[in-house]
Image (cartoon, rainbow, N blue to C red):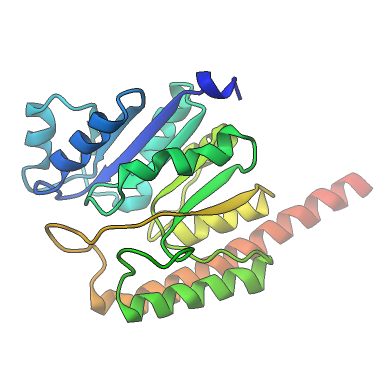
Length: 248
């Protein structure tokens, strides 16, 4: 990476039907950090999100159909890779991620202390903590990642995270599609990246509803758990094949 003061940072904002939130999110970001570039990825919104983005002349791309958070964020990583950014930061378009914590999230990367940084709401336990049911699910997924990969990460579903250029490259090529955050962590662990959690205080969603409904929670847990296990096994198999090839 270039010297820290010259590092190019892109803030990626995924938005799906965020007509009530997107203006405050972008305006808050640009008011406090005009030095950072940003990209709003409009994920096939069916409300007035795109009209607002166009009217306000925000920097954005619109996907023709809804790809889900994974597809939207991969679009952001592809943009970051092609435009030679050193650090990519992911925040949500619903206003839950306070931009004031962006310097804290990118600081360990700038100091070469980490490759992959997660803004965690559980380090200090302050701010919005999600529902009890979701916290239980997060603890389960955290334990599963620790069991399968040997790395303890507390806030495995946090969408507030930053990565350096090698992860930008990898995620621009492949990024998990549905509920991608835990599997992306497994990818980073298997690539032996240095993962660090830093404390952030998250806000509750101001308007609208979450994309994950209560009825989807069981499906979410089963799918993500299987994805974590399959991801871990596939990396193990590939590593074994590489070692076998070297031995021959």
